[in-house]
Amino acid sequence: MSFFGAGTQQRGPAGAPDQARLGEAAMELEAVSDLFNRIVSSCHAKCISTRYAEPEINKGEGVCIDRCVAKYFSANEKVQERLQNAQKQGGGVGGL
Image 1 (cartoon, rainbow, N blue to C red):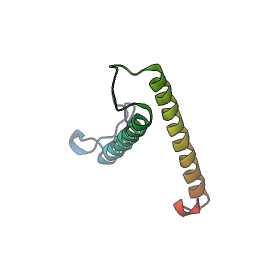
Image 2 (spheres, one colour; image 1 turned 90 degrees about the vertical axis):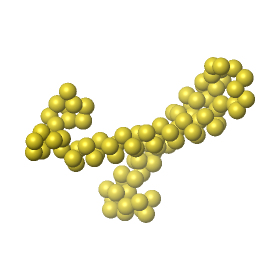
Image 3 (tube, rainbow, N blue to C red; image 1 turned 120 degrees about the horizontal axis):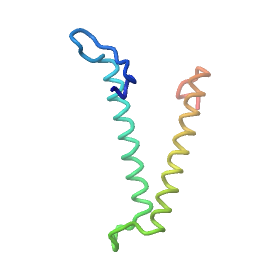
Image 4 (cartoon, helix red, strand yellow; image 1 turned 90 degrees about the horizontal axis):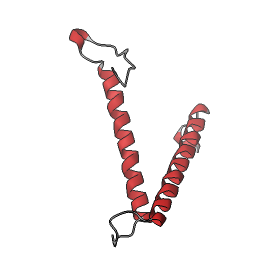
Protein backbone atom coordinates (compact mmCIF):
# COMPACT_ATOMS: atom_id res chain seq x y z
CA MET A 1 0.00 0.00 0.00
CA SER A 2 1.30 3.41 -0.95
CA PHE A 3 0.61 6.58 1.03
CA PHE A 4 1.59 8.92 -1.78
CA GLY A 5 -0.43 7.35 -4.56
CA ALA A 6 -3.24 5.62 -2.67
CA GLY A 7 -2.23 2.32 -4.24
CA THR A 8 -2.13 3.67 -7.80
CA GLN A 9 1.51 4.64 -7.94
CA GLN A 10 2.82 4.77 -11.50
CA ARG A 11 5.98 2.87 -12.18
CA GLY A 12 8.61 3.52 -14.75
CA PRO A 13 10.77 0.96 -16.50
CA ALA A 14 11.75 -2.13 -14.52
CA GLY A 15 9.25 -1.30 -11.73
CA ALA A 16 11.07 1.84 -10.56
CA PRO A 17 8.86 4.40 -8.76
CA ASP A 18 7.96 7.58 -10.61
CA GLN A 19 10.78 10.03 -9.81
CA ALA A 20 8.55 13.10 -10.07
CA ARG A 21 6.18 11.76 -7.41
CA LEU A 22 9.07 10.82 -5.14
CA GLY A 23 10.49 14.31 -5.56
CA GLU A 24 7.13 15.87 -4.65
CA ALA A 25 6.84 13.63 -1.59
CA ALA A 26 10.36 14.55 -0.48
CA MET A 27 9.61 18.27 -0.87
CA GLU A 28 6.37 17.91 1.11
CA LEU A 29 8.17 16.01 3.87
CA GLU A 30 10.83 18.74 4.02
CA ALA A 31 8.15 21.47 4.22
CA VAL A 32 6.28 19.69 7.02
CA SER A 33 9.52 19.07 8.94
CA ASP A 34 10.50 22.72 8.55
CA LEU A 35 7.07 23.87 9.81
CA PHE A 36 7.31 21.52 12.80
CA ASN A 37 10.82 22.72 13.69
CA ARG A 38 9.77 26.38 13.47
CA ILE A 39 6.77 25.80 15.72
CA VAL A 40 8.84 23.90 18.28
CA SER A 41 11.54 26.57 18.31
CA SER A 42 9.15 29.50 18.54
CA CYS A 43 6.73 28.05 21.10
CA HIS A 44 9.50 26.56 23.25
CA ALA A 45 11.20 29.94 23.52
CA LYS A 46 7.92 31.68 24.41
CA CYS A 47 6.34 29.16 26.76
CA ILE A 48 8.91 27.02 28.54
CA SER A 49 11.20 28.35 31.24
CA THR A 50 14.91 27.76 30.77
CA ARG A 51 15.13 26.73 34.43
CA TYR A 52 13.66 23.23 33.96
CA ALA A 53 12.69 22.94 37.65
CA GLU A 54 10.18 20.15 36.97
CA PRO A 55 10.51 17.04 34.80
CA GLU A 56 7.07 17.57 33.21
CA ILE A 57 5.41 20.52 31.51
CA ASN A 58 3.21 22.33 34.01
CA LYS A 59 -0.36 23.43 33.27
CA GLY A 60 0.56 27.01 32.45
CA GLU A 61 3.23 25.91 29.99
CA GLY A 62 0.84 23.43 28.39
CA VAL A 63 -1.84 26.07 27.89
CA CYS A 64 0.73 28.48 26.50
CA ILE A 65 1.99 25.86 24.03
CA ASP A 66 -1.57 25.04 22.90
CA ARG A 67 -2.30 28.71 22.25
CA CYS A 68 1.05 29.29 20.57
CA VAL A 69 0.58 26.40 18.15
CA ALA A 70 -3.00 27.48 17.38
CA LYS A 71 -1.86 31.05 16.66
CA TYR A 72 1.01 29.80 14.50
CA PHE A 73 -1.34 27.69 12.37
CA SER A 74 -3.88 30.51 12.17
CA ALA A 75 -1.26 32.98 10.98
CA ASN A 76 0.16 30.44 8.53
CA GLU A 77 -3.31 29.80 7.11
CA LYS A 78 -3.95 33.54 6.64
CA VAL A 79 -0.63 34.01 4.86
CA GLN A 80 -1.35 31.10 2.52
CA GLU A 81 -4.83 32.48 1.72
CA ARG A 82 -3.35 35.86 0.84
CA LEU A 83 -0.68 34.27 -1.33
CA GLN A 84 -3.28 32.20 -3.17
CA ASN A 85 -5.48 35.26 -3.72
CA ALA A 86 -2.50 37.24 -5.00
CA GLN A 87 -1.62 34.42 -7.41
CA LYS A 88 -5.22 34.19 -8.67
CA GLN A 89 -5.22 37.91 -9.34
CA GLY A 90 -1.96 37.62 -11.24
CA GLY A 91 -0.07 39.82 -8.83
CA GLY A 92 2.28 37.13 -7.52
CA VAL A 93 4.01 37.61 -4.18
CA GLY A 94 4.55 41.32 -4.82
CA GLY A 95 0.79 41.86 -4.97
CA LEU A 96 0.33 41.56 -1.19
